[in-house]
Length: 231
Image: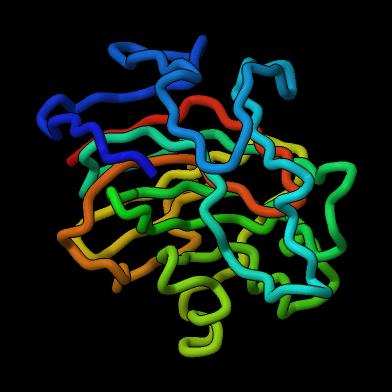
């Protein structure tokens, strides 16, 4: 990944997907994003203008040949974000070539540093409606790439970094992550109670960097109104 272009925290910059800026928000163009293994284009979804993000078919993990793991496929904005709020409206669909394990993986990344490390909270929408309580309990996931991916966290601290949430494929889901020091809380669809609380962000309080939108194998991702509000 390229080195971070610092943006002063005091600027209080708010980014919004092109065509959906509000108040003093600044529009974000495709050229503002750094693309890590993904394609990004303008699109329309559910009658709303949005960004559409996809990954190449050849990048889809083969569960028969490799261990499934979180990777760094994302579109991200370089800045100097530490504490504050990151939010966006997100939606995901399964691609035509989605593997059986695809879940509509989509999420937000933050504190992306110059070495490519980042914290993330992401969603597995199909788990939310599964007829299997264990899968349902894995609807929301926290990870810290590359050291603390979902398989390690699930093995070392079962259930601590995952939770159930009411999700669906094919609809807009509002994600809002509040970051303060070593704590992050995810709020979904304007609810007052968090869907997931992380009290020990793995890279610590000094971690800083960019923010972005993430996906994994088999997902077609849409997002709009991406906003970053530094504390």
